Length: 189
Image 1 (cartoon, rainbow, N blue to C red):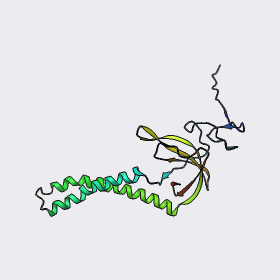
Image 2 (cartoon, helix red, strand yellow):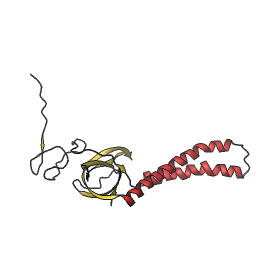
Image 3 (tube, helix red, strand yellow):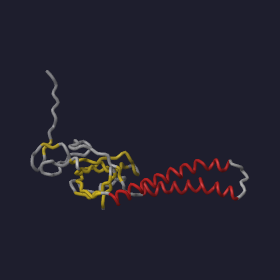
Image 4 (cartoon, rainbow, N blue to C red):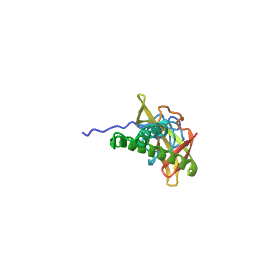
């Protein structure tokens, strides 16, 4: 006698249709399913967030200017003061300069993403399906990623928008405005 697995079928509390995701595809009611355990009804497309916050702008800018100062200004100061140490002081400054340049590239890349979406992006509307814990941890709590359904020329698609915060600011089944440019998205406040 073969063992049969019995799958528990979940029904929409409003219309009674079988559901596999957070929002009923027939009547639009919230089903109570957790986003982490729900099925993906539509394909997931890559989403690069194009918003600015402390962690992707100010934090790398601190490194860019702090390490850049020691990496570039100190060698100039040693040269102008008649370097007693020879080239040794300049060699010590190279790692600082490299870290400063890399941090500056990160700042410029994030600014480019943000302004390219703001200036050239096309506005669209999305529906919030739910939230999942992101890989990023802030003060001991998992940051949140928002599962958003958007309509594209290829049909409905999901994006997982990393909020980079622990809050869940948008209501499930709520509509939000987004701007999209290529594979970059930003939520319009």
